[in-house]
Length: 502
Image (cartoon, rainbow, N blue to C red; front, side, top):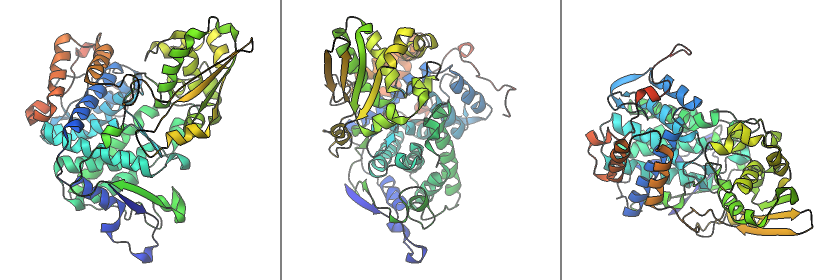
């Protein structure tokens, strides 16, 4: 792994394209290095994981609306949409739009946290959609996904977008473009231009994750996916992009990130070096913001030490800078304490999550967010007793450059009215690769079955899992069947309607 030094260049310095970050990314994408066995196995896990959470969210309103838009764009040789029959095909960019929204809606798929945040599994829907439309094999898809994960994770390691209130999808456009470039075996020049166009068109602010969080949080990654597929198509036709997109005098670093004095180090594999980025990422056992995963497990562990919630005077959670300021009381968002808040807001409130996890001893992607659950008087009282504080030691663990030492948990102090204090801490979620019960293939399959058990048939469950587990051997005709089909009468908005423009 080699660090690429990234800074702003004045126009007269005339930075050559081969020294630009976008070109370095394109070179990684165009490197035909073999995908290692452990990476293949993890990619299969994440394909299964994405499908499980997508099907569980299939009839939620944002997903239904995204699908209603997408089905207005059929294409006989196109891509598949989750839930719909495999004989219905759609333009790849619209399939990516519908499927990406379904994957993201429940905030329940994989994550990587470093200098910034990401859900690298957001790369899967667009790269899969293009693979299906372009008659690619499972092996081609694996190569493309390995690149998507690698670029996404390395950008997240090197560039903090959140500090400048820029949404993390700004790292997603370039990673998708690179992944599609690998998938289609495009030349370095085309991938380079595609990355630049993708970044230029997918910059947005973090207001989508601040205050009253709306359904746009689910749409944001799929919007980046759609724009990126369109960008790659243009560049394949010979179009070019604003350049240098990162380093230019009037570009991303200069005016959106750290400014003229920007100084970043971006790790990138050297030629011939395997793409192992996905192995540093982790999925979720609980449907909530990743920084709450260890805290939920911690709540399950300490709750039995409290016999009566009325005895609790206050609760303090010591945690990292990011957790405190993004989902904790340091955010300054009153909505995070509002029983009438949206589901999207509640799953970004560690105070709410901790209160419910303590009281219930379980976490459910639907029941834990029901309005009646949020409005329970005893929950509201406990919820309002909780505050978070940044603890430098937890911030250091969060940003530890060694993935084996990086941690995202916290320490809980429960002060009882008697004056007694219950203290416990947990560094890693149980499902984390370094946690007490790391997720294995069996766990991914069980999560899939739990989330889809009352939605799809046993035969369809087996058919999909058999295809997914054999991903590297799928021929193009088989990859075109990698989808989950449901009785269309159970899928809302599976046909165009008259409520919108499309």
